[in-house]
Image (cartoon, rainbow, N blue to C red; front, side, top):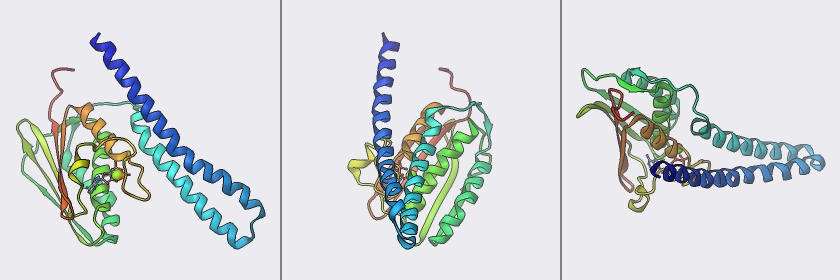
Length: 229
Ligand code: ADP
Ligand code: MG
């Protein structure tokens, strides 16, 4: 019965998610449909304006689908021993230009002798991209982001601290719920994907935050296959 319960729980979560996705994608689709009609009669100047709006609606659908790919259809997942130091550096390089454009400095502090993490490399990368993006997007003026890699018990500990807008206490508890976003162009799916990746790795994630001061994310990742699998 335990297995059955789990399965039905999963199904209802899936149903909720599907409803959410359908809703979120239908809005930009409806708008695209409308503008396609309008295009026919529009003069050149207005047509350009319409095309710009249509492009941004298409981007929105693209973002939503992109974030869901990872949860929707797990690609060939292969667990391997992964060097977090290299992985973090590659993600920082990836998002560096975004940070520089906002005058944000990213500091990375790595302790000696960090063990390898037992995990799926592109998922761990996705996890870290989503978190670092949120950190960057949370800061509307210049400041610093501090990343630390260390150990805690038998796990590798990643710490990510920003000096952004922070998260209200009542929201901290519900982070990871799909489609919660405070951003005009947000999907509200990034953290859901993070939680899912952490869960699949048998890791842990914890947020602490002070409004208008910043947010700290701590992540523990295992260094060996979990015994329960
Ligand atoms: P999105 O980034 O598309 O909004 P996420 O799931 O990544 O979706 O994040 C959901 C929401 O959680 C964000 O819109 C924001 O309100 C809040 N949030 C996440 N990370 C941070 C952070 N580092 N600082 C402040 N708010 C955050
Ligand atoms: Mg995000």
